[in-house]
Image (cartoon, rainbow, N blue to C red; front, top):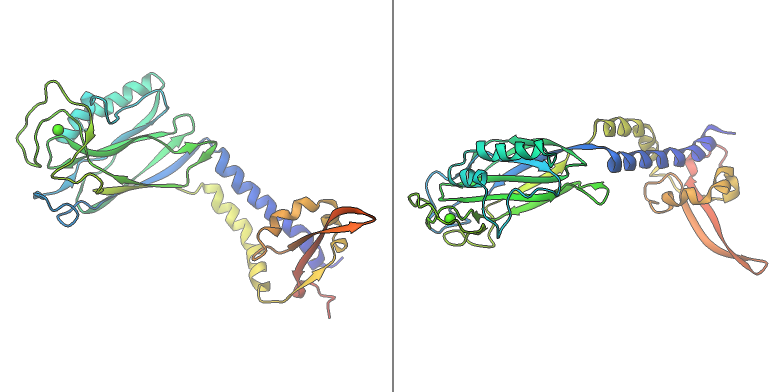
Length: 304
Ligand SMILES: [Ca+2]
């Protein structure tokens, strides 16, 4: 049996194995690394009303946790940690609140990033565990009385899968703990406090002040798999330009034995080494599927 013949039989199996490995890695790793990029767009152009001097955001602060804890939510009263963060940018009390939930088994870790001038950008990388798949992350918009942006309970592991990427538009919330109505109002403690709500004027409801782009980073194993895949990708590339010819299904005992195995290649005929043609044929009154495979002419040394 020629080398190319063997290759044409083995290659689809390698591809299927490769896809299977990537699939398994995506679905089953207990933890995943995520990069969170905070792009602040808030400026006099996006929000011209009374735009202040020295626009910036306080250090990102947050944690990963399960569904048993909610650190903040519109319509509820701000915790002391959210109050301090939203009024001063100080992250210490909020971190203590997250640490308390780590102690009770509701949260996994807390993290602090950088503050930035706006417009501007910063990022942090976090490690997320399947058992604590939700992300809560906040930052104070400054100067402001008690206005902040962020996410709460955002699932990064959902329905058995790690989320590959999410882009979240960030709108400004009022923590409800200070009654100031302009960016640079003097402190005016709200007593009693009001529920957390979207902040209107001088901001505009519906106009984001930035985005979080949350992207899963590749596992180290993915690079090894891609490296393993490089030889057959080169093989495919070399043969893309050759004409394809029809070979009979009976040319490949492997194909006869495992016809369904090759259906993955059939769905990706542009780059698969074996294109698969499935057609219904009638033999002796019974209808059944007939499988035929295409492969590059150049891979058959015995072709004239
Ligand atoms: Ca307020």
